[in-house]
Image (cartoon, rainbow, N blue to C red; front, side):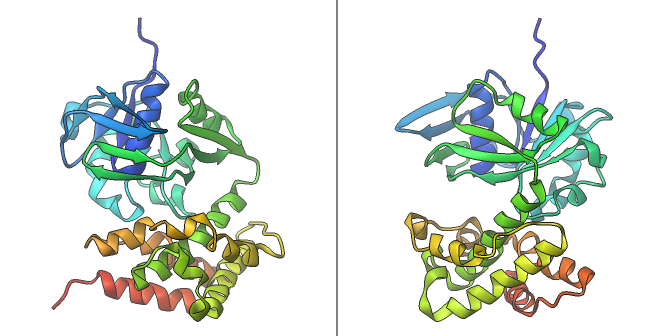
Length: 297
């Protein structure tokens, strides 16, 4: 008798593909919910390529309610995936929101109760070569709340080494620490069309510092805790090996896809206004990214 939970991975790009592969390593056979079909999933990691015979679906009417839905689309793609969410989520379904940003639970509130939504902080260096083909640079980590739901999600990934799950007692700080990097590095690199090393360039030093300080101020108002030297240490990281890395939002602009600025920079302004904190630099970058996303007339 198979007592494994029914799992669907919604969105099988770089993150979804790597997550689905890790589930396969852990003995699961998740349903892969995609727009572009492919025969099978493959993942390259540590000079080894593995193939997974997970079922691939392009229509939601072939599936019923799942025990788990791992939402791996970009944050701005949730509306386009609404028909999948309505099909896959039942009264007992848990949803792991494996996306960027800080408002994970709010994004899926129309589909699942807050206590069954599990926000995740993803640190997973992977990219999709083509549909169903993922290259993962090294083992990744996923931070989850230190809760029963977070532990249940981590348990799905037991007995595999490609992704480690780390419960965080201060999950709010984990979310906002990641957003500092995503909001600033993503926006600068997307607008400049350069890899992450651009963030450490002398020409943008004051801009980068100001942007990060805005995010930190809003994050603290939301309950996040940052060390006093957090901004300086974050800028220093961009001078290291990660400087050659292209952020997903910069790669999206380079390749002509819509960008994920809503969950990165726009949310800083929205929450800043809620707390009465000015965020003029993030607001300016939000406007520029939105303009870059707008269709030509």
